[in-house]
Each structure stands twice: as C-alpha cells, then as structure tokens.
Length: 432
Image 1 (cartoon, rainbow, N blue to C red):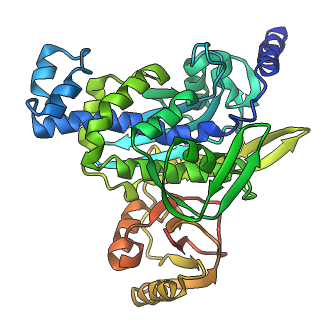
Image 2 (image 1 turned 135 degrees about the vertical axis):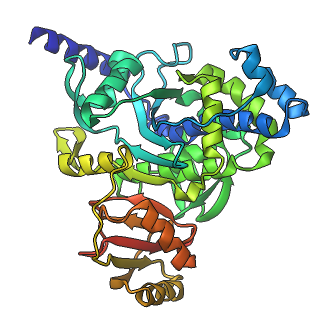
Image 3 (image 1 turned 45 degrees about the vertical axis):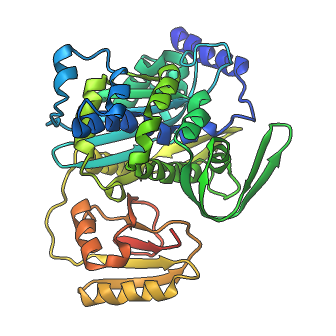
C-alpha cells in the first residue's frame, strides 16, 4: 500500500513540476495525423523505390536513409506483404522543455491504436481518449491513461493499453509535439475542411486562431489552431473527432507523387522527434499493404464512454460492454451472425444538402431499406456512422455502390452516439 502511495506521489510531483503551459495545451492532438504521416511517408518512400527502381534520382536520394538494411535488402527492395494483422500503438507526447529529452517524463496527449490487416487490405483506427480512467500497470493505481507515459515511458503505456483492452501491441510510434509544426510545413501544408468559422485569441498564452469556414491548405501554425480550438462544446471528444479527420486529410495528401521530393526533409525532422520500434524494412512491408487501401475506407472509432468529473479532474469513464464490442470489431475483426433483418437508416443533412439527402432516402427505400428519420443538423463532414454491429465494412462497401452520393463518406463506428432512435446506421450529408 505504501508502495502504491509512493508511486502516486511520483506522479503528483511530476504534475507540480510540469504544470500545463497554456500556449501548448491540446497541441498534441495533431500528433496522430503526423505519426501516421511519418509511418506512411517512409513507407511510401520504399514503395516509390520499388516502383521506380533504384536508378531514379529520388530513389538515390532516399537510399541514403536505409543504412540499417542489409545489402541484399537494399539491392532488391522486394516488398513482401505481411500475413498477420498488426496492432500499432501511436502515441503523441507533450513538451517538457527545450533542452530536455523529448521523450522522458512526458505525458501522452494522444493515443490511437491502429489495426492493420495486410491480407485484407484494410485499416481500423481506435482513438483512446487521454482522460480515460484506468488502472495503470505495474501497480501505479487508478489514473488517467495519459499518466502512463510520464511514469514509465512507452513500456508502461503499452502494458496499460494491453491490460485495459485485452489486446497485444505489436509495434509503437511515439512523437514529441515540438516537431509537429515542422513536419506539417515540410509537407507543404495539409488541406483541411474547416467546419465553422474559428476565431479565438489568448494573448497570455500566445494563441491566435483566425480560420474561416471552408477548405483550406493549412500550414503548421494554422493546423495547431484548428486542433486546439475548443469552443464547440464537445471537449476532448470533439478534438478527437477533428484529429481523425486530420489523419484522413494527411493520408490522402500522401498519395500524391508531389510528396516524394519532400521525404528527406521529413525524415530529418522525424529522426529527432519520432521514436519507433518499426524498422525501415518493416515499413516497406506496410507500404506494400497500403498501396491498395482507399483512405475513405479506413474505419474509425473512439472508445465508448461518458464524461465524469471528480473535483477539478475530468475523466472519460469507459463503457465496458461497448468498449469490448469495439475491440472485438476493430481488432479481432469479429463478424456478426447473419440475419435476414433489414437494417434501418437515419439521415441527417446540413442546411444546403436537403435535395441530396432526399435523393439518398429514395435510393435507400428503392433498395428495400427503411429510413426511420430524416432531419437537419449542423455537422461538418459527410459520414456513415454505424451503431449496430451488423453494419460492417462489407455492408458499407455495398452501400457505397448502391448509393453513389455516399461513395466518399468516411465510415465511423459508434455504438453510443445516435441521431435517430432505433436507427442501425446514420448517413450524414454535409459540405465535405
């Protein structure tokens, strides 16, 4: 008991010495997109070399970054596809001072568990809210999950995630947020759809946000403002949602050949601010697996739960039953039992999309599906949100063929957030 008390005291002392800097708070939420950026951009480098050959001028430039490969691997650049599913834990950590070790004693501000199925050419991504109340591994007691990295680094973080979710983490990537703006700028900016006008000034914290609604190519500083904006009433979950959309925007940009010349600069930044146990050759396997994956088909989810507050401390209390349902679906890829029951749809649309929403309703009805409600809502992105386990990625793939208007909509699984009572899935029709 005294040992547990001592460990809790360690974290309390850490919090006292590392009080959150208002100018940086929340910035780590853009890490996730850039963590995936680093993985995918390095993997894309290998894919490019495998496609263009080693005599290409860009290939020669990239070859200088593969010193850890064996001569045989460097010569051939064959890209065998992994045969087993992989769980990759992506962690973004905060800053602890300009001259400090970028990974020591830092809290995890972002966590995403990526399940990669190379054989099935699919990716599932689960956001783990940083305020999730869990029991930290190694007898550190009940804390927010973001305390794990501060107390025991990536090893304690992985062990806690494994114990909490009952899964095995195969690989990890950790990024310090000091390199985030540099990485965005190195990519030449990232196109992001701003769902509403965002204006905010914090003169004491040095934060100034001035973003107008619409599609914009944001630089690093603007991306920081977009993902730190919190005047939407949704708190940490709202920022998690924007983080997921940012991931999608980054991954779509990486499919452009124009990114190739920028890879060396990105790798130089990554060498300082990114830590991973993925070898470059393992990333080449990932590159092969990612070649045929359409980023709009990546399925996202957030661990289900509800907000709670104890004194001044905010927690996210995980729903055990719904969380297990998400893990079974997203990690273990469980398929629901076949059923003859027709799924019920709901449709929500933004104010300028009523005509499109009615067309989708008619197409669903013609296909034999009930639409039990249709209404207007201020929602920023077009999505297909599954509430019932029977709404699988295979069903969504079929739906996109039957209803062309939803072909580019992102699929999100959320068994808790329902816009229409008794709907099995909701189609969001919006401006992006």
